[in-house]
Length: 593
Image 1 (cartoon, helix red, strand yellow):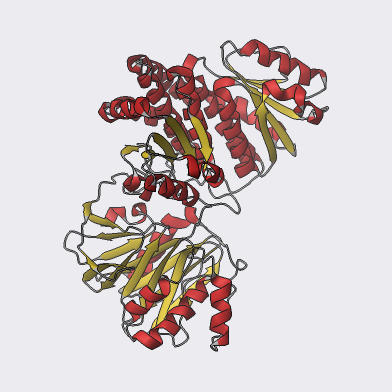
Image 2 (spheres, helix red, strand yellow):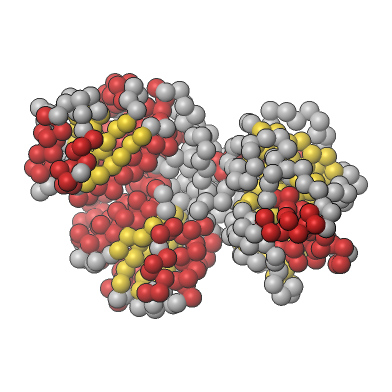
C-alpha cells in the first residue's frame, strides 16, 4: 500500500520560486512520473502549468515568482492526463491544492458535494478535497481553519499542500511524509515530501507528524495540531544530509552506479558503532516472540534477517509482510519485538502494522535510510542504513545494507560479532574486485542478451539464497517487465517441475554449503527436461548451459550472489531498452540517509 506522488513548495526572495520548485520536483520524480504540475502566485493571482509526461518539458507560460508549489504524480484515481495532473484550482481561483495519498471515502464526499452544486472537471480524488475545503470555508471564513476542518473528514492516508493567491502555503500531513526546511536566517521556506529534494539549500528541518498542519506566510511558520487546534512549538533539527547533490558520475544509469556503491555501504556498516546493536540483542533475547516486517524488497530483506536470526542465533524469528500481517494483530503484546527494515521509513502498510503494535506495547526496531522518517520516530531502536541517496526506483544497495545489517545482528546475538565483521571485511574486498572486473560485466551481458529473448524465467535456490532469488525475481519483474518466478529448489518435484520445458531459462543460485548437493540434483532434473540452466555461484557444473562465477564468501555469499542477480536484471532491462531508473507504473519512497 504505497501512496506515492511528491509535493514541493517554496516561499522566499533569494531564488525564483518557479525554477526552485521545478528543480525540487525533478529530485522527487522517483515518487511518481506520470504527470507533473507547478502553480505560482504573484501576490494577487495564481497561474498553473501542468502536463502528463516528463517534468519541466513545457514551462514557457510560468513567470518568475516568490511563491510556488508543485507536484509529481503517480496516478491512483483518474487517467494520466493534463487535466488530472495536480495542482487543482478552487472554483474562484483563490487557491490551488496538490495531494499525496488516497481519499478512501472520496466517492461519498463527491456525491454529497455534487448535490450541493459543485462541478468536477477531473477524475481525481484530489479535486474532492478542493471542493470540500470550499464548502467548509463558507462557515469558517478563514482558509486555514477550513483546510483543517475539511482534512478531518478525509479517510485514508493523505498529505496536502495549498497555495493561496496571496502567496501563503498551508500543508497538512497524515501518513504520507512532509518536511519543512529553512535557511539559516529563516528567509527561505521549503516544503517537500523528502529532505533530499531541498537539502543543499537548508540548514534546519522540521519533520511533521501525522495530524499536524503548517501555515507559512512569507517569513513566518506556524504549526498546529489538526484535531485539537492547539499551536505546537516549532522544534527544528539540524540538516545532516551531506551527499544530497547526486549524479550518475561515470555510469549510464543510477541503478548501475548504486550497485557499484554497495561495497562502500558494506564498509560503512563495518565501521558503525555497535553499542545500540548490542542493546537490541539484549531486547531480542528478552522477547517472547521476534517478528521481522517489510513490504516489497524490504519484505524480502525482512525474511532474510529472520533467516539469519534463526540460523545463527537460534531465535525463531517470524517474517511478516505488511499487507498480510493483520492476522497477527490480536496476538501482538508487550513481550514481542518487531524488526522493520525499510528504504524510506514511510511505507504505509508497514506503518499501519507498527501503529497497531505500538499501541499494544510491542518493542519496535527499525533500519531505514531516511533520518527523521515516521518509522524511525516510532521506534525504540533506530538504525540508519548508511547507504546514501538511492535514486533508481529499483532498490539495490539499500537491500544489501539491510541484509548485511541483519547478518551482523544475528551474529552479534550468537556472540560472534567479531566473526561477522571479519566476514564482512572479506565480502567488501571480494565484492569490490568483482564489480570492478570488466569480465564480470561482459559475462553477464552475454547471458542477458539470451534472457531478454524469453517471456518467462524461473529462479531456484535453498537456504541463505532462497530470499535472494526472490529479490532477483523482483528485479527482473520491475526492470525487464518479464514473468519471473522464484521458488524453493526442494519443492521442485512437488509442483514446479510441470513448468519446465525445452528452452525455458532456469536460474540456480547456490553457495558452497551443505545444501549444494541437493540443489544440484534439482539442476540435473530440469536440465534433463531441456531447460536452459544458468548457474550463479562459486563453481561450474556440466549441467549449466550458462555459468556466472561469483566469489565464495561463505556465510555472506547471499550478499555476493545478489550483486550478480541485480546486474543481470540491469543488463536485461538495458538490452530491452527499458527506462531502467524509472520503470513503468511503479514508484518508491525516498531512500537516503
